[in-house]
Image (cartoon, rainbow, N blue to C red):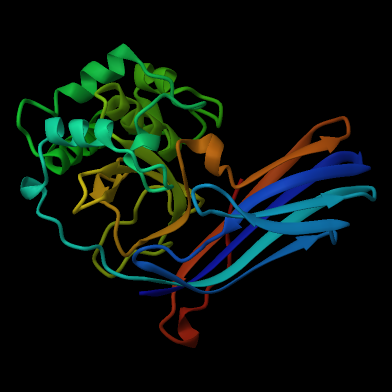
Length: 304
């Protein structure tokens, strides 16, 4: 499936900002099952400095700074991305969780896709004994890794309520777990915390969902903004498999990957420092449109 991807992020400041410096993780890159046909990032006002780097996990980073007074900042992504259907893995044929635990612990691979980077607590995902116990119910002895992870994903989908505004970017997995409500970031963090508490590798994915569902299918939660889900490592053959606890589904052709990291702190779409005072407002508009000809074009949907 080929998608036209558009995201517009707009800050409006109460007072003029004389200087600001930002890091944007908004440019998708080629990954397994995903090909970026084109991607551009337009920034207004025009930055005084701008450069691009690639981080440890292979994410494309745009660093930019503004050195003149401005009361608005707009960052717009326009991209065309091709996503292949997910490879069909038989969950019951993946190694057991005990085998995966042993393989990950014994790994000497320091690369970005190594399972070792998904084993430990990270800045936004501390370990939590209650979450570990909750996750452990899905992994009885000798249960295949992916089979248990899919059950955990579905339990989170069933036990937690998707409530916009119930949490924010700084809400911990422990807080979301106690209230049993939140958004995609919270559900991904809870799942990752539970798996890591069992010494099973898990990592965080930010990206997008197809905005409008195929005919006859329900609309997915989180399709109006940047989305988040988890990837679990299921041994050397299956590798990392994306699981979306917000919707209770395996990540597939409707999921576009933007960035991968240990947790949200590694993949935040737009970070920065501003020299200013007063409040600001943020508006994000996202559209992920299947390219089926000119009739597929639609206007941006705005989310406050």
